[in-house]
Length: 353
Image (cartoon, rainbow, N blue to C red):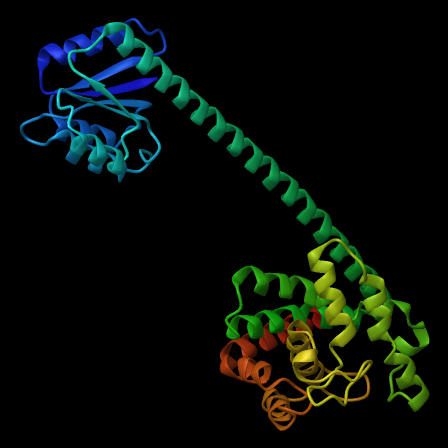
Protein backbone atom coordinates (compact mmCIF):
# COMPACT_ATOMS: atom_id res chain seq x y z
CA UNK A 1 0.00 0.00 0.00
CA UNK A 2 1.52 3.30 -1.13
CA UNK A 3 2.00 5.83 1.67
CA UNK A 4 2.76 9.36 0.47
CA UNK A 5 4.94 11.37 2.88
CA UNK A 6 5.11 15.14 2.38
CA UNK A 7 7.56 16.90 4.73
CA UNK A 8 10.19 19.54 3.93
CA UNK A 9 12.38 18.46 6.88
CA UNK A 10 14.80 15.72 5.71
CA UNK A 11 15.18 14.34 9.25
CA UNK A 12 11.40 13.94 9.65
CA UNK A 13 11.13 12.51 6.16
CA UNK A 14 13.80 9.89 6.95
CA UNK A 15 12.14 9.05 10.29
CA UNK A 16 8.69 8.52 8.75
CA UNK A 17 10.20 6.47 5.93
CA UNK A 18 11.97 4.28 8.51
CA UNK A 19 8.75 3.77 10.55
CA UNK A 20 6.86 2.76 7.40
CA UNK A 21 9.65 0.31 6.60
CA UNK A 22 8.62 -1.64 9.70
CA UNK A 23 5.06 -2.09 8.36
CA UNK A 24 5.13 -4.99 5.89
CA UNK A 25 2.28 -3.78 3.65
CA UNK A 26 3.48 -0.15 3.46
CA UNK A 27 5.53 1.28 0.58
CA UNK A 28 6.79 4.78 1.51
CA UNK A 29 6.76 7.46 -1.22
CA UNK A 30 8.65 10.45 0.30
CA UNK A 31 8.56 14.04 -1.03
CA UNK A 32 10.21 17.14 0.48
CA UNK A 33 8.41 19.41 -2.02
CA UNK A 34 4.59 19.51 -1.79
CA UNK A 35 4.33 20.66 -5.43
CA UNK A 36 6.24 17.57 -6.55
CA UNK A 37 3.99 15.40 -4.37
CA UNK A 38 0.89 16.90 -6.02
CA UNK A 39 2.38 16.27 -9.45
CA UNK A 40 2.98 12.62 -8.51
CA UNK A 41 -0.64 12.32 -7.33
CA UNK A 42 -1.86 13.47 -10.74
CA UNK A 43 -0.90 10.03 -12.02
CA UNK A 44 -0.99 7.90 -8.85
CA UNK A 45 -3.45 7.34 -6.02
CA UNK A 46 -1.83 6.72 -2.63
CA UNK A 47 -3.48 4.64 0.08
CA UNK A 48 -2.47 7.04 2.85
CA UNK A 49 -0.97 10.54 3.03
CA UNK A 50 1.22 11.77 5.90
CA UNK A 51 1.27 15.55 5.50
CA UNK A 52 3.36 18.11 7.36
CA UNK A 53 1.60 21.36 8.26
CA UNK A 54 4.51 23.82 8.48
CA UNK A 55 6.23 24.02 5.09
CA UNK A 56 7.66 27.23 3.57
CA UNK A 57 6.54 27.12 -0.09
CA UNK A 58 3.06 25.65 0.48
CA UNK A 59 1.70 24.87 3.93
CA UNK A 60 -0.04 21.62 4.73
CA UNK A 61 -3.55 23.11 4.64
CA UNK A 62 -3.13 24.36 1.07
CA UNK A 63 -1.59 21.06 0.03
CA UNK A 64 -4.51 19.24 1.69
CA UNK A 65 -7.02 21.38 -0.20
CA UNK A 66 -5.34 20.61 -3.53
CA UNK A 67 -5.06 16.89 -2.75
CA UNK A 68 -8.77 16.56 -2.07
CA UNK A 69 -9.79 17.86 -5.51
CA UNK A 70 -7.54 15.43 -7.42
CA UNK A 71 -9.27 12.43 -9.05
CA UNK A 72 -9.36 9.42 -6.73
CA UNK A 73 -8.14 11.30 -3.63
CA UNK A 74 -11.49 12.34 -2.18
CA UNK A 75 -11.60 9.36 0.20
CA UNK A 76 -7.90 8.62 0.74
CA UNK A 77 -7.07 8.91 4.48
CA UNK A 78 -4.82 11.89 5.27
CA UNK A 79 -2.96 12.37 8.57
CA UNK A 80 -1.81 15.90 9.38
CA UNK A 81 1.55 16.13 11.19
CA UNK A 82 2.07 19.33 13.15
CA UNK A 83 3.75 20.90 16.16
CA UNK A 84 0.97 23.55 16.14
CA UNK A 85 -1.65 22.45 18.66
CA UNK A 86 -4.03 25.38 18.10
CA UNK A 87 -7.71 24.58 17.61
CA UNK A 88 -7.91 26.87 14.58
CA UNK A 89 -5.43 24.75 12.62
CA UNK A 90 -7.19 21.52 13.57
CA UNK A 91 -10.63 22.87 12.69
CA UNK A 92 -9.45 24.12 9.30
CA UNK A 93 -7.72 20.81 8.58
CA UNK A 94 -10.92 18.91 9.45
CA UNK A 95 -12.94 21.22 7.20
CA UNK A 96 -10.56 20.52 4.33
CA UNK A 97 -10.79 16.75 4.81
CA UNK A 98 -8.05 15.61 7.22
CA UNK A 99 -8.83 12.28 8.90
CA UNK A 100 -6.32 12.28 11.77
CA UNK A 101 -3.68 14.43 13.52
CA UNK A 102 -0.38 13.63 15.12
CA UNK A 103 1.51 16.18 17.14
CA UNK A 104 5.28 16.44 17.10
CA UNK A 105 7.48 15.19 18.71
CA UNK A 106 6.24 11.75 17.68
CA UNK A 107 5.68 8.81 19.98
CA UNK A 108 6.85 5.94 17.77
CA UNK A 109 4.39 3.44 19.22
CA UNK A 110 1.48 5.83 18.69
CA UNK A 111 2.69 6.76 15.17
CA UNK A 112 2.99 3.09 14.23
CA UNK A 113 -0.51 2.31 15.59
CA UNK A 114 -2.17 5.34 13.93
CA UNK A 115 -0.63 4.53 10.53
CA UNK A 116 -1.67 0.88 10.91
CA UNK A 117 -5.26 1.86 11.75
CA UNK A 118 -5.53 4.16 8.72
CA UNK A 119 -4.11 1.50 6.40
CA UNK A 120 -6.65 -1.03 7.70
CA UNK A 121 -9.37 1.53 7.06
CA UNK A 122 -8.08 2.08 3.53
CA UNK A 123 -7.88 -1.67 2.94
CA UNK A 124 -11.56 -1.90 3.89
CA UNK A 125 -12.37 0.91 1.44
CA UNK A 126 -10.54 -0.90 -1.35
CA UNK A 127 -12.24 -4.21 -0.61
CA UNK A 128 -15.65 -2.55 -0.55
CA UNK A 129 -14.93 -0.82 -3.87
CA UNK A 130 -13.84 -4.13 -5.41
CA UNK A 131 -16.94 -5.87 -4.06
CA UNK A 132 -19.17 -3.11 -5.45
CA UNK A 133 -17.44 -3.38 -8.83
CA UNK A 134 -17.96 -7.14 -8.87
CA UNK A 135 -21.62 -6.71 -7.97
CA UNK A 136 -21.99 -4.07 -10.68
CA UNK A 137 -20.44 -6.41 -13.22
CA UNK A 138 -22.72 -9.25 -12.11
CA UNK A 139 -25.77 -6.99 -12.45
CA UNK A 140 -24.62 -5.92 -15.93
CA UNK A 141 -24.19 -9.55 -16.94
CA UNK A 142 -27.64 -10.45 -15.60
CA UNK A 143 -29.21 -7.46 -17.38
CA UNK A 144 -27.43 -8.39 -20.61
CA UNK A 145 -28.74 -11.96 -20.39
CA UNK A 146 -32.27 -10.72 -19.67
CA UNK A 147 -32.04 -8.29 -22.58
CA UNK A 148 -30.81 -11.07 -24.87
CA UNK A 149 -33.73 -13.30 -23.83
CA UNK A 150 -36.18 -10.47 -24.45
CA UNK A 151 -34.66 -9.77 -27.87
CA UNK A 152 -34.88 -13.46 -28.74
CA UNK A 153 -38.53 -13.56 -27.66
CA UNK A 154 -39.37 -10.50 -29.78
CA UNK A 155 -37.58 -11.99 -32.78
CA UNK A 156 -39.44 -15.27 -32.42
CA UNK A 157 -42.79 -13.46 -32.25
CA UNK A 158 -41.85 -11.46 -35.34
CA UNK A 159 -40.80 -14.64 -37.12
CA UNK A 160 -44.11 -16.27 -36.22
CA UNK A 161 -45.95 -13.28 -37.63
CA UNK A 162 -43.85 -13.34 -40.79
CA UNK A 163 -44.74 -16.97 -41.40
CA UNK A 164 -48.42 -16.08 -41.13
CA UNK A 165 -48.34 -12.81 -43.08
CA UNK A 166 -45.12 -11.57 -44.78
CA UNK A 167 -46.66 -8.14 -45.50
CA UNK A 168 -47.48 -7.58 -41.81
CA UNK A 169 -43.94 -8.65 -40.83
CA UNK A 170 -42.40 -6.10 -43.22
CA UNK A 171 -44.71 -3.44 -41.82
CA UNK A 172 -43.60 -4.35 -38.28
CA UNK A 173 -39.96 -3.77 -39.22
CA UNK A 174 -40.55 -0.42 -40.94
CA UNK A 175 -42.69 0.96 -38.15
CA UNK A 176 -39.78 0.62 -35.69
CA UNK A 177 -37.78 3.19 -37.68
CA UNK A 178 -40.67 5.65 -37.97
CA UNK A 179 -41.50 5.29 -34.26
CA UNK A 180 -37.85 5.90 -33.34
CA UNK A 181 -37.78 9.03 -35.51
CA UNK A 182 -40.93 10.41 -33.84
CA UNK A 183 -39.67 9.59 -30.33
CA UNK A 184 -36.39 11.37 -30.98
CA UNK A 185 -38.16 14.42 -32.37
CA UNK A 186 -40.24 14.49 -29.16
CA UNK A 187 -36.86 14.65 -27.34
CA UNK A 188 -37.57 11.61 -25.21
CA UNK A 189 -34.73 10.01 -23.28
CA UNK A 190 -32.38 8.00 -25.52
CA UNK A 191 -33.03 4.74 -23.69
CA UNK A 192 -36.79 5.27 -23.93
CA UNK A 193 -36.50 6.04 -27.66
CA UNK A 194 -34.67 2.76 -28.21
CA UNK A 195 -37.20 0.85 -26.12
CA UNK A 196 -40.02 2.32 -28.22
CA UNK A 197 -38.25 1.23 -31.41
CA UNK A 198 -37.72 -2.27 -30.01
CA UNK A 199 -41.34 -2.64 -28.86
CA UNK A 200 -43.06 -1.04 -31.88
CA UNK A 201 -42.76 -4.09 -34.20
CA UNK A 202 -45.03 -6.02 -31.79
CA UNK A 203 -47.96 -3.61 -32.12
CA UNK A 204 -49.75 -5.95 -34.56
CA UNK A 205 -48.84 -9.23 -32.83
CA UNK A 206 -52.55 -9.82 -32.20
CA UNK A 207 -52.92 -10.73 -35.87
CA UNK A 208 -51.35 -14.07 -34.94
CA UNK A 209 -54.75 -14.93 -33.47
CA UNK A 210 -56.71 -14.11 -36.65
CA UNK A 211 -57.70 -16.66 -39.30
CA UNK A 212 -55.53 -17.10 -42.39
CA UNK A 213 -58.33 -16.33 -44.80
CA UNK A 214 -58.73 -12.91 -43.21
CA UNK A 215 -55.01 -12.07 -43.25
CA UNK A 216 -54.54 -13.31 -46.80
CA UNK A 217 -57.60 -11.66 -48.35
CA UNK A 218 -56.54 -9.52 -51.31
CA UNK A 219 -59.53 -7.17 -51.60
CA UNK A 220 -61.39 -4.79 -49.31
CA UNK A 221 -62.76 -6.36 -46.12
CA UNK A 222 -66.49 -6.67 -45.48
CA UNK A 223 -68.02 -5.10 -42.37
CA UNK A 224 -68.00 -8.43 -40.53
CA UNK A 225 -64.41 -9.08 -41.57
CA UNK A 226 -63.41 -5.58 -40.53
CA UNK A 227 -64.98 -6.11 -37.11
CA UNK A 228 -63.01 -9.35 -36.73
CA UNK A 229 -59.80 -7.65 -37.89
CA UNK A 230 -60.26 -4.97 -35.23
CA UNK A 231 -60.11 -7.60 -32.50
CA UNK A 232 -56.35 -7.85 -33.12
CA UNK A 233 -55.77 -4.91 -30.75
CA UNK A 234 -57.24 -6.69 -27.74
CA UNK A 235 -55.79 -10.04 -28.80
CA UNK A 236 -52.33 -8.51 -29.05
CA UNK A 237 -52.64 -6.94 -25.60
CA UNK A 238 -53.73 -10.33 -24.21
CA UNK A 239 -50.71 -12.06 -25.76
CA UNK A 240 -48.31 -9.56 -24.17
CA UNK A 241 -50.21 -8.84 -20.94
CA UNK A 242 -48.86 -9.21 -17.38
CA UNK A 243 -45.21 -9.58 -18.40
CA UNK A 244 -42.40 -8.80 -15.96
CA UNK A 245 -40.36 -7.51 -18.92
CA UNK A 246 -40.67 -3.70 -19.35
CA UNK A 247 -40.28 -3.96 -23.14
CA UNK A 248 -43.22 -6.38 -23.40
CA UNK A 249 -45.36 -4.25 -21.08
CA UNK A 250 -44.74 -1.29 -23.39
CA UNK A 251 -45.53 -3.44 -26.43
CA UNK A 252 -48.80 -4.47 -24.76
CA UNK A 253 -49.78 -0.78 -24.48
CA UNK A 254 -48.94 -0.26 -28.15
CA UNK A 255 -50.88 -3.34 -29.23
CA UNK A 256 -53.95 -2.39 -27.23
CA UNK A 257 -54.16 1.32 -28.03
CA UNK A 258 -52.55 2.03 -31.41
CA UNK A 259 -56.01 2.29 -33.05
CA UNK A 260 -57.37 4.73 -30.45
CA UNK A 261 -58.05 8.21 -31.87
CA UNK A 262 -57.01 11.43 -30.19
CA UNK A 263 -60.63 12.67 -30.23
CA UNK A 264 -61.97 9.44 -28.67
CA UNK A 265 -63.49 7.96 -31.82
CA UNK A 266 -61.08 4.99 -32.11
CA UNK A 267 -61.13 1.44 -30.77
CA UNK A 268 -61.17 -0.77 -28.74
CA UNK A 269 -61.78 1.44 -25.66
CA UNK A 270 -62.61 4.84 -27.12
CA UNK A 271 -59.77 6.53 -25.24
CA UNK A 272 -58.98 10.18 -25.97
CA UNK A 273 -56.07 12.61 -25.59
CA UNK A 274 -53.54 11.86 -22.87
CA UNK A 275 -55.58 8.85 -21.72
CA UNK A 276 -54.00 7.07 -24.69
CA UNK A 277 -50.46 5.96 -23.71
CA UNK A 278 -47.84 8.15 -25.38
CA UNK A 279 -46.11 5.11 -26.90
CA UNK A 280 -49.39 4.11 -28.56
CA UNK A 281 -49.91 7.66 -29.88
CA UNK A 282 -46.43 7.51 -31.42
CA UNK A 283 -47.09 4.12 -33.01
CA UNK A 284 -50.49 5.29 -34.31
CA UNK A 285 -48.82 7.96 -36.46
CA UNK A 286 -46.02 5.63 -37.59
CA UNK A 287 -48.52 2.82 -38.29
CA UNK A 288 -50.84 4.83 -40.52
CA UNK A 289 -48.04 6.64 -42.35
CA UNK A 290 -46.34 3.35 -43.22
CA UNK A 291 -49.62 1.67 -44.15
CA UNK A 292 -50.55 4.52 -46.52
CA UNK A 293 -47.15 4.60 -48.24
CA UNK A 294 -47.00 0.81 -48.66
CA UNK A 295 -48.60 -1.03 -51.59
CA UNK A 296 -51.58 -3.27 -50.80
CA UNK A 297 -53.08 -6.05 -52.94
CA UNK A 298 -56.10 -3.79 -53.55
CA UNK A 299 -54.28 -0.43 -54.05
CA UNK A 300 -50.84 1.07 -54.76
CA UNK A 301 -48.89 2.85 -52.01
CA UNK A 302 -49.47 6.58 -51.61
CA UNK A 303 -46.78 9.12 -52.33
CA UNK A 304 -45.04 10.49 -49.22
CA UNK A 305 -46.56 13.95 -49.83
CA UNK A 306 -50.09 12.49 -49.94
CA UNK A 307 -49.55 10.52 -46.74
CA UNK A 308 -48.14 13.51 -44.85
CA UNK A 309 -51.10 15.64 -45.98
CA UNK A 310 -53.43 12.97 -44.57
CA UNK A 311 -51.61 13.22 -41.25
CA UNK A 312 -52.04 17.01 -41.30
CA UNK A 313 -55.75 16.65 -42.06
CA UNK A 314 -56.24 14.20 -39.18
CA UNK A 315 -54.01 16.12 -36.75
CA UNK A 316 -55.94 16.60 -33.50
CA UNK A 317 -58.76 14.24 -34.49
CA UNK A 318 -57.24 10.85 -35.29
CA UNK A 319 -53.68 11.67 -34.24
CA UNK A 320 -51.88 13.41 -31.38
CA UNK A 321 -50.83 16.80 -32.86
CA UNK A 322 -47.41 16.64 -31.19
CA UNK A 323 -46.66 13.22 -32.69
CA UNK A 324 -47.70 14.38 -36.16
CA UNK A 325 -45.54 17.50 -35.83
CA UNK A 326 -42.62 15.36 -34.65
CA UNK A 327 -42.76 13.24 -37.81
CA UNK A 328 -43.13 16.28 -40.07
CA UNK A 329 -40.12 17.99 -38.46
CA UNK A 330 -37.78 15.37 -39.92
CA UNK A 331 -39.03 14.76 -43.45
CA UNK A 332 -35.48 14.10 -44.60
CA UNK A 333 -35.32 11.17 -42.17
CA UNK A 334 -38.80 10.03 -43.22
CA UNK A 335 -37.83 9.94 -46.89
CA UNK A 336 -34.59 8.10 -46.12
CA UNK A 337 -36.52 5.37 -44.29
CA UNK A 338 -39.18 5.15 -47.00
CA UNK A 339 -36.62 5.02 -49.82
CA UNK A 340 -34.52 2.41 -48.02
CA UNK A 341 -37.42 -0.02 -47.71
CA UNK A 342 -38.68 0.70 -51.24
CA UNK A 343 -35.24 -0.17 -52.61
CA UNK A 344 -35.11 -3.26 -50.41
CA UNK A 345 -38.49 -4.44 -51.73
CA UNK A 346 -37.43 -3.74 -55.32
CA UNK A 347 -34.25 -5.82 -54.91
CA UNK A 348 -36.28 -8.66 -53.41
CA UNK A 349 -38.69 -8.57 -56.39
CA UNK A 350 -35.81 -8.67 -58.88
CA UNK A 351 -34.24 -11.64 -57.08
CA UNK A 352 -37.57 -13.48 -57.13
CA UNK A 353 -37.93 -12.81 -60.87
